Length: 388
Image (cartoon, rainbow, N blue to C red):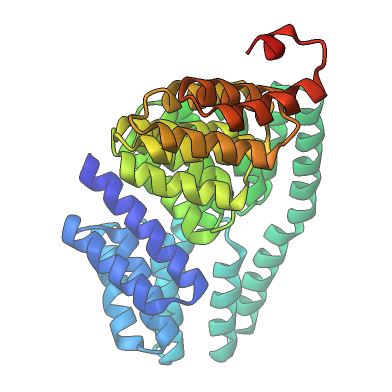
């Protein structure tokens, strides 16, 4: 099962590369799939698409035939093979392929339109007209599908979940290519914790449009929720592959790797998340915890100070800072940390007091006097400062 899931994700990566025009990377990903699962029809079809894009028609044909041999009901492979035969003017074979595709998926307008073009080439006017009319008839339903989709979204906004589901399904019945409908059904299933349905709808959306980074991200959330962590990692990585500027995919990846104990890898993804969005405080907490768990006390302290300088109201970082500064063996280091904080916030009573207490402890009397005089200027009625 794990191998199959890996193959699925690698094939999705290949599809993404194909959409992006990265044909060499797409080919590499496909061959990685076939090393895991030698009989993987979707990847054979993808390789056919790649070679057809390059213009290597004979190679494309070979891969489409392999895909069909492995999965005879792969309509798109039949249609793509038909397009090659049409290009080579092998009309009989092209007609046979399109008829096979239509037999499997009779509601795809493009199949009829392309078959109609072949009949036109052969001067079969009536057959060509029938195909074009069938294509137009199917496409005539698209506006109705869009209306159902729009209504479904309104119902969803109003919290009428069951009615929204019905409208999204009607939309798909009229137009099976409505990616938005599948996404919305997936979102509903995710919210209602019907995870199998969510996976099913999101996967259908991706089959129609491989580069939906948000859907890959949501799939990652589903797999994380059901404990399929390696699969979740693959989904979040695919999301990042498409959109490198969405911080939450990095955060989610970091969370899983942190949970798995892969702290150095988690650190890298957390760092990328806060590069993109600096105020994800939960991520900054995890970054501190990683340094503490790996025994890097000074780096943990530095990270606390970085956060405090950005947002001095986050008490967790204050507490961790004090707790860990007290563990330092070299008191000079502790002094420097507090001096740095006071330099950044010269009117911060707390830091002045902490610095003053440490200076007194180390018998640095002259500096301690200066620090407490400054504190008294700020809070003249604080008797503790006078006593110290």
